[in-house]
Image (cartoon, rainbow, N blue to C red; front, side):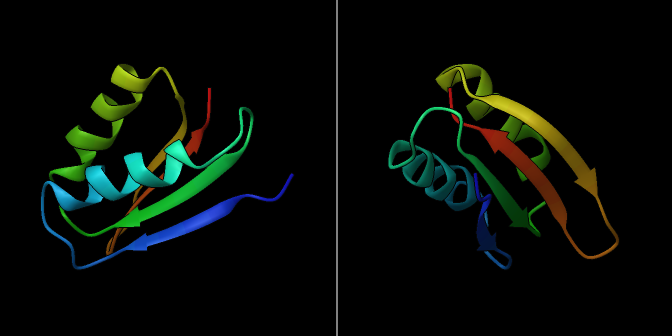
Length: 74
């Protein structure tokens, strides 16, 4: 199954979490999406979103220029 990607660089809270939620709502169970953000608040918001929706945060990585999240749709 192909991993989707969502580039949310430059967007500020709460937009990364809202756009991630919208993308997840259109996905099938088991599909994965990689989300790239630059807003430091996403490090809190995206994991919290996964807790609320029941989706799985497969991987979280902080790079010099961005935060990367891989999420599997529940």
